[in-house]
Amino acid sequence: MKLAGDALYGTFSIADFAVESSPEAQAYATKYKARYKLEPDLYSSWAYDAVKILALAIKNANSTKPVDVKKAIHNIKDYKGVEGTYTFDQNGDGLHGYNIVKNEKGNIVFVKHIDFTPK
Image (cartoon, rainbow, N blue to C red):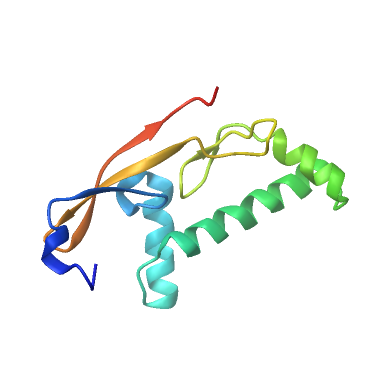
């Protein structure tokens, strides 16, 4: 955005994390800003969800053995994270959707979330 400037105004993109996309994302953003005095980004939100899912899997497996944790992760369904709702498939893919955002004069604005079902 710094390099292209106003040439990006009015364009659309996809984003893993968008503050306005869900109550979970909004709550996370509020806590993150209060703690770090920065806007959260996709790297912090991705890591946050990853650690929360790992902790849930360890708790559900009652184990830290990799095979047990892997199985527990694959069994997680409809977990509401800050990047979306996670339902893991046989490949270990959990998120099946993206946020559509628009650049409105340099401000990234959430448009909508699109979920899809993998084939």
